[in-house]
Structures are given as C-alpha cells and as structure tokens.
Image 1 (cartoon, rainbow, N blue to C red):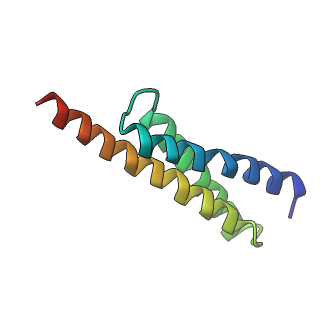
Image 2 (image 1 turned 120 degrees about the vertical axis):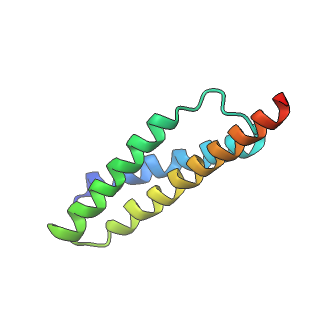
Amino acid sequence: MSVFEVLMLVCFGCAWPTSIYKSLKSKSVKGKSVLFLYIILLGYVFGMLHKAFYNFDLIIYLYLLNFLMVFTDLMLYYRNLRLSKKDMV
C-alpha cells in the first residue's frame, strides 16, 4: 500500500461530492463532460483490476467509493439531460 496512492484517491474523492451536489442543484448539463466522466470511470476500473489481480489491499475500497461517486454524477448527467430536453418541448 502506498501512502501517495491513498492520498491521491482521498483528494479525488473529496471533489466528487461537490460535483454531485452541483449536478443535483443545477439540474443542468452545462459545464459537464460525459466523455470525461467515462474516462474517469475507466481509470477507476483499471485501478480496481490492478488491485484485484496484482496488489490486493484495502485501497481497492477507495477506488470503489470513487467509482460509485463518479457513477452517481454520470447518472445525474443523464437525468439532467432528460430534464433539459423536457424543458425544450
């Protein structure tokens, strides 16, 4: 286990609740990049796979937590996209 890996995941993990909150409150997709969210999700999947196959330790749960937060933000993106399309009709 690397302390630097833990700190990186904690720092990234602190940013996602803010992004989720903004997505919930704004009900808008402005300023969001769905491609960026998918790339981040893929990065967390690769991190979890590395932990599962080569270096299993408890840090895998930080990857999972971050993955779930990004996935939540992604789902809010699609909700907000649907809401914005409703407003246009």
